[in-house]
Image (cartoon, rainbow, N blue to C red):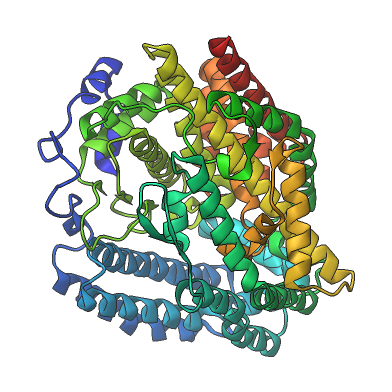
Length: 621
């Protein structure tokens, strides 16, 4: 943190020089890089040091018990107990982060999987040792807790929001016995998602089809994803028809698993005295139901722009008509490669509208050994930012390509990292961690600034169309598609709560109706594509995906304000990142002028979609 503070003081000229000073370890780095590029010794210098830290944390857990039954004795004692809980949590987070990152360096190394299991056991033990805190704080009572907060500076600065949130949920917190029963029900009630996952990964006999080039393709989830954008239209149709027909053959089994998941959500809602399962799911972050329902309503009002996009896609792909299997092929090809040096330089240029402080932080961060950028055998797939080593810095696992999607992923994940850096600098540990409802705003906004920068500097009509196509596809996939998923979840739970019988056939019917509405009258849809709901694992994490849509809407709102405005608009947005988890996410955004329960953020995204379409159509005229 000291180095970050010094970096903040640099003059703008020095910041600009940092933007091109890629460290020696990363210069000319290539996807064939031999091993991990991050430096985990900053977390623990050796594996032995990690193990010692783990053992010390495990040995410290029994000390928590001495506070049991005493949290209401005094403000000072409550502050002392909460500080112990928090400090242990911070240490255990660092312990888990180290071993999780080591495990992801090469998932084939069994020793690290075993050590990760040890870290997981430590987390479980910590949860068990502290499970009594919330019920006991509730027993102390709201008036006394609020009096303690007013009387004790540590409670006021570090734990006031934590305590207020516990008190807020008092009517939905059961007795110790009731909470124990619900906790015990957790594992068996996760079974529907696990069974659905097993069906997809091991039990379904996925078909193999032959493509037009003679290639034999097994259409499991990976085979589908890799071939759904096949250049040959007949191949795309064959992929879709075979993949979704196979899901249809297991519709009854998937229907049973998802019906069980919906019923488990209703069980939890009733047990905790919520009126609906949606209310129960949104309660943790205190998100009003109006946010969810307004998102769905405004996305539906904005469907004409989505339908317009499908017609533009048909024109650009030079098709006589458009079908559901024509959604994934790229509109324009871009052969331009990006090496790591260029990714860094372009990202730093793109985020200049976020100001000198942001520039200083991202310049220093990207110059450090904080990320592992390239794919290699054995490395965990995907991309993420891990902020768990709070007193060190975030770490990024990436699997970049040298195409634009690699550059976009680079900007996206560094957006997450800067969110954590800004929150950590502005908030104490207890208020720094931010919820998913805010998390994707910072990353998605960086992507939008990147597109804007690339468009400004594009050298040909084709290049401009490529970036516009990326933006439109981002709006389609992250706003409209995720909202369609959210609407499906809402309809499924509403039907169940109204006493309607549910089945795989009913879910397919509901989903196919949504496909038709969202894709409009001109996109051809075979009824077999209605089986797609069975493919979406996120449905077993109920009422989660809507946050992708709200985040891109908020990011678009702020990006437009920043690009059209100045320091005021920039600082207003940065205040959201700096707030971390110090308040409920909807309230943090409301203070920044954005009411997520109002139509404004969703209308801003639809307007941005319209503007992007206008630009693309003008180029094609």
